[in-house]
Length: 255
Length: 117
Image (cartoon, rainbow over all chains, first blue to last red):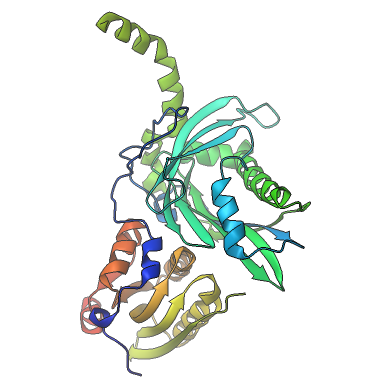
């Protein structure tokens, strides 16, 4: 078999769908609202850098009867991504929107224990790793509850449009892993993606029901990554909020 | 629906090394082809799997996800996964996604084979 050499490979215009090379996340021009902590300057993560077991979770909703192209549905998804989130999980795209390399800040609230209301704040974000007409993928920063990627896509299956969220992630540190295993954080995250898909279906007038598939890709815990807890966004958000009176007093002293 | 637009040929380079020649696109629909190639290489007794990306036309983010799941399978079998022939663009993608920290990357087949000692 004759193969072209790498040097002969032509630049493919679709390669612009990838984020430009970056070692640290940089937050662009943001709308008012998010705290913008725990993201700027953090390294983006793959599922290989997390602590806990690696899961691939796939959530799908069939958009029966929707007479659109996958690209049209994806455009609506990108345009309304923050709106489709549940109230306790607020996304703030930059002014540039969902484009490769852009950061979306997140102000989330999580329940401290199963069954309790979402009240613990977590300020974090994600970077758009890849975005084309029918797919986009976000990757998480250091300190985020999960290390890895979430891919959102729209495609046709048996002549019906399907919208899909697929995550390939590990809990980022031992604390998040504990919350996932014993305090229901994992199922809380599942509910978020199901909510997003049902909201998308609702946007197109479809009463959608999300199907879920979970695959344990790597049952091993990576103890070498236990140190990730140092950058835990939940802990740092709480300290940030506790420090608000001190920052207020410091600002007052400067005036 | 988008179908797999990729072919993978498995060849034995040394008694314990197999090379997977990838020609086409790696996306979500390439999963069966990639995992079948891996199974074929493992069945041939390979301890080292080399992915040849010289014929890669395009890879999207789902394709990168497939490489992660392949890497985990390889590691669990105590095998080793390496790659060569990546264009500059995809070398940057490997760095951005930090796959280069777990998959050895070499410029060509000779260098990849030499790294195995």
